[in-house]
Length: 241
Ligand code: URA
Image (cartoon, rainbow, N blue to C red):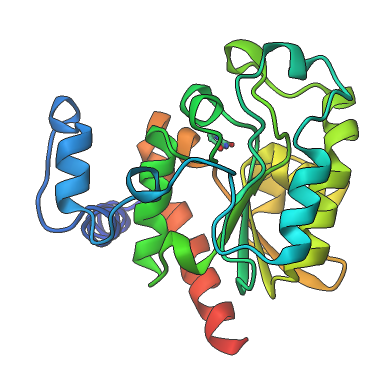
């Protein structure tokens, strides 16, 4: 890589950083809930939602579906879950974000992406002019795998129909798959994330953008530049729809 390219990468990284985090640079130990809430342009959904049902601006159909499946016992995960995490957001959303599975905080609150990865997701949404209330967020698995282990094929197989039905009811015009499990499950493929990223795929005639899972971005900040490229594509497609 030439010196010029290295400088370009650094410049792009800081531009992306500024878009996501604003003008203040802070160190990891400074990132507390208080800081993030103070800096976030919208109050994260985790702070505002009344935690009763796991859905927000719902439709009667979505509500009925939630009631049908909330006590699911199809796989072993029901034994260890605290809450069934149905999904959250706008039933009329133009864009639906699909993650992997609830983590600890999500299991406790019954809502998707309310932990550290969710805080980054809020900032990613904001960077393309969206807030939680504009989108719908759901996971491939609705129950937390113990110790946040990877979803198992049988669990994905049992749970996938729920996501499929949510997509049918919400009818988004764009899907954003967050990470490998969401991408592989929606596209019914075993390809790697790096092979799938960078192109627009289709799920039943709905375009899908595949990007890194926010938790992976927290572990590997060097991927944020590529994630920003994906988000720009999301913005572009949303402007067209
Ligand atoms: N990771 C996910 O994939 N989903 C969540 O809801 C939280 C973390």
